[in-house]
Amino acid sequence: MKQEKTDRNEILTARRVVVKVGSRLLAGKEGWIDTRFVSRLVGQIAGLRKEGKEVLLVTSGAIAAGCRELGLKRRPSSLPDLQAAAAVGQTALMHIYHQAFRRRGLAVGQVLLTRDGLHHRDRHLNARHTLLALLGRKIVPIINENDTVAVDEIQFGDNDQLAALVANLVQADLLILLSDVDGLYAAAGARGEVIASVEKITPEVMALVRGGPGEHSRGGMGSKLEAAGIVTRAGGQAVIASGTRPEVLAEIARGEAVGTYFPTSFGRIRSRKCWIAFSCLKKGRILVDEGARRALADGGKSLLASGITGVEGTFRAGDMVTVAGPDGAEFSRGLVNYSSREVELIRGEKTGKIRSILGSKPYDEVIHRDNLLIL
Image (tube, rainbow, N blue to C red):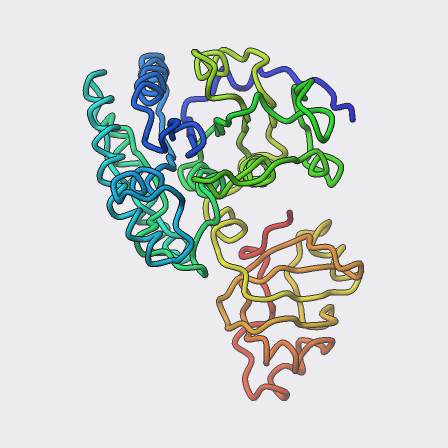
C-alpha cells in the first residue's frame, strides 16, 4: 500500500502538545515501572518546555505498578482486582513522575478522568478549565483514566482514546502516541518499511494493523489509528512513533520523518461540536433518506422529521445519536431534540404534523444544525 508523502512543516508551529505513553514502554522486565525510561521521557518533555511548548502527558502504568505492589505476576481479570491494583499503583506511579519532573525543575498535577466525566457537558468543561489552569501556571498535567472507579460502561478501553479526547478537550495542535514499534508498517504481518504519512484512515489502512494488547496494556495499533482519526478530524495532527528512540520528541517537534504522521483532515472544529462528536456517549442511531443526507452533509441544514426513515436504539432528548444515510454509513453525529419513541412516531412526517402527533412541538428540528457535526 502506498501513501503520499506529506511534509511536516505544520508541526513546527505546534504550541500545545499531548504526549501519550503506554504500559508496554513503562513496564520493565519485572513488570515494575522502568524509572530510567521515565527519566528519559521527562527529560524530553522538559526539552519541549524549554522551546516554549505546553505539554500534557497521558500515561498508562497504574495497574502495572499496582500488580508489583500487590505481588501479582499477571494482570488481574476481575474488575475489583483491577481497581485495587490501580488504586495502589497510581500512587506509586505519580511518585515516580513527581520525582523525575522535580529534578528537572518542573511541577506536575494529577488529573484522573473517566469517559462518563467527559460525556457530561458541565464536567467536560470543568476538566478543560482545570487542564488549562494547570498549563497557565506552567504545570505539566499528568492524566490517566480513573481505573479505581471505572466500570465496563465508562472505560475508555485504552489510553490512546483518552489521549485523543484530551487533545481535543484542550484543542492541542499535536498528539504524539509513543509505542514500542516504529510506526505503522507498510506490509501487514511483519515489521519493515514504516509508512511516513497517512492522509486518511481508510479500511485499507486499518487492514495493516497487527498485534494486540500486551499483558499490562489494553491498546494496540488499531486503537492508535482510531485515536489519530479522532484528533485529525477535529483539526489537530498526530504522530505514532517509537518511544524507545532517545530523542523522539525533539525529532518529531523538529518536523523530522520519524514514525507515521497524520496531518489534519479539517479545519479546527469548535469546542462544543468536538464534544458532541467525540466525547458524548452514543445512545442510538437515526437513518435518513438521500435527500436528508445531502441537506445535512452538503447544505448545512438541520435534520427534520420528514427525512428520517428509521430509528435504532433507545435515547432521550438531549442524547447524542449518530446519523446514517441509505447505505447505512454514518456521516454525522448530533444532539437529538426528541426521544427515540417520539422520533419513531414522527419519522417521515412534515414538521407541521408534529404537534398533532405528539401533543406538543417544542422544536421544529429533530437535530438542529448547531448541535450537528458532519464527519
